[in-house]
Image (cartoon, rainbow, N blue to C red; front, top):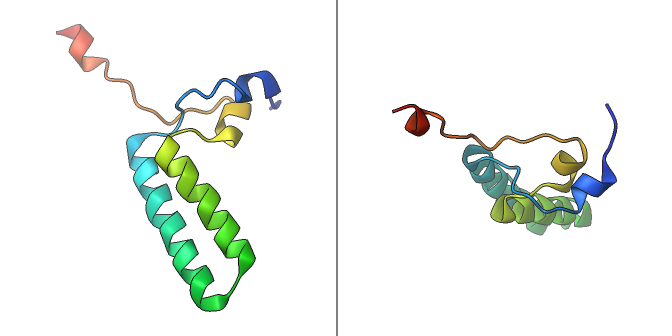
Length: 78
């Protein structure tokens, strides 16, 4: 598996709706934990996860050409 840097800078949506929800909840939880434990690492990781959840774009997914967005092909078949 190779990492594609050119694809990474296109900023195409590659995070699905269900995963967005998980990322937002997980990022918020890590930020809350970082407040109580005074951990800068948890804060930074939580902010990154929260940002990718809100934007719907993950740079690592772009580099590895992964996409979790679902396409609705059932509407075109009717």
